[in-house]
Structures are given as structure tokens and as C-alpha cells.
Image 1 (cartoon, rainbow, N blue to C red):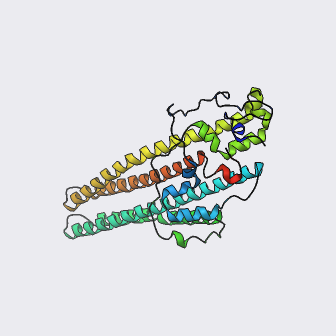
Image 2: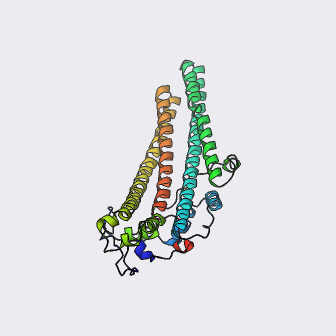
Image 3: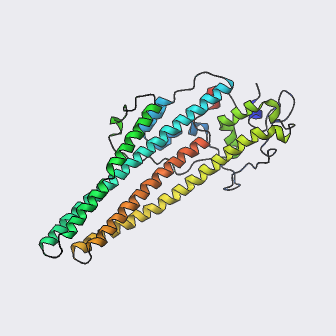
Length: 334
């Protein structure tokens, strides 16, 4: 069987034909990401082997570990295909889990909004009794509350669909997990930084790159091979690098957006408190109060979306870096 470093297009061993393994340089590829040329420490096999544990969510741990037992003994193409499928299942469970928790958070935002509007209605009725406003204010509060509350059933339906997807991915009937998701918990965030290493580290950890090397055949990945013979392998490497670059960019952007929205939520909360105080004191009208509280609901939902996007981007980054695969598990040592 071809030595692993030759399979990966990295330097390190002589093939049976005496040729050299193809290096990234020979493929016309630099061994650094576009984000910068400074080498970064690679993501360790230990860090990636159970990447979902970095989210520090016990239920998520349980779900993924139930669905992703150790790969069955296999060799060659079958081992890599089995690994790729398992890593995809792990990521799919985590993404659905994040989606479910985000929908729950949006329902909580709606309920907080409805509680505030109930207080507004009490203020409106007090002011109505004092002949300061007409019954119109209280009626507008009620109508607005009903309109916003109407969004809850759709979110609940989507949560049930997420739970069903996770159940099926973990080998259970669609309704098996609904009770486990009854309690609302925060969207798991995960770490703010991940060691990504270099492209050489990346292709060394990607089962699909090894599979591509095996499928293209030994002569096609040696330094003496023509560009045409190297092309299929290079295409897979390029797609791998593209996925890693995009995952890094998306994770950085999601972190920046989340930080900006944290500040925006704080500002919107202050504005809503001030608007309610002014309405109670007769210094502003109901429209201004409703606008302030609607703005708060909107930015809170945007923050939920940003937190979920950041978590999903982190899942994608872990997967792009090779996921939970350990070469030794498939009998494929680097």
C-alpha cells in the first residue's frame, strides 16, 4: 500500500517506483492560508478527536457519541468512506442542535416582549382611567401582542422538526427526543479561537484527501508525474483548502457580528426602559414606546442569529480541519 505521506502529497518517503511524493509547492500551492503567512500551531488530534466537547454541552455530547461509535474495522477506500460519512453525521447533529436552541431562544425573546407589552397595557389602562389617553392605546398593545405571539407556533413546529432530525441521525424514532429538549438552555458557544495550522496540516488530517490520493492511483501523485496526471488529486486538495479558508472567514465574521450585536442589544434595552418611563410620565406617546420595544425584539433576535451563526461556523471549521478522524483509528498512520 502507498505510504501515507505520499498519499497526502507531502514530503517524507520514497514510493515503490522510487519517485518523490508531490509537495504542495509542486502543485503550485503555498503552505499558508490567505489570512496571513505566519505559521500557526496545528489543531491537535486530541483537540479534534471529540471536537463537540469544546461546546461544553452534555446533551450534545451524548447525542453525537450515541450516533458516532468508533468506525468498524475496514481498510482502503471503505475505511475512508466510512470515516467521511461518520464525520458528516456528527456535524449534522451539531448543526441541528444549534438550530433548535436558537429557535428556543427566539421564543424566549417573544415571551419577554409579550411580558413587557403586558406591562405597557397596564400603563395604558391606568392612563385611560386618568383620562390622559383614549382606549386606543390599550387596544393597540393587545393587537400588537397577538400579532407577535402568532410567531411562536411556527417556531415550535420547526423545533419539533429539528428534534426529529437529530433523533433519526442518532438511530431513534423521530419523536424519541422531544422530552429531552423540553428544557430551554443557551446556545452552546464553544471557544473563541481554534488552532488551524497550515495547509499541510490540513491535508494530513482530511480523510477525503487520502481517499482521493488512493483513488487517483500511485503514479498520479508522484513528483515525476505530469500535470495532467496530478490534476484529479490537486482538484480535491484545492476544494479542501477552499472549505478551510471559507470556514475560517465565516467564523471570524460571525464573531465580529456577535460582538457588535451585544453592544446593540445593550443600547436597545436602555432605549426601551427610557421610552417606557417617558410614556408612563406622559412625555411620549404609545407609538414611540412600541417602536422602541419592537426594535429591542428585533436586535435580540439578530443577536440570537449571530450566536447561532458563530456556533455553526465553528462546527464547519472543525469539520474543515478534519473533524474527529484519527488516522490510527482506520489503521492509516501518517
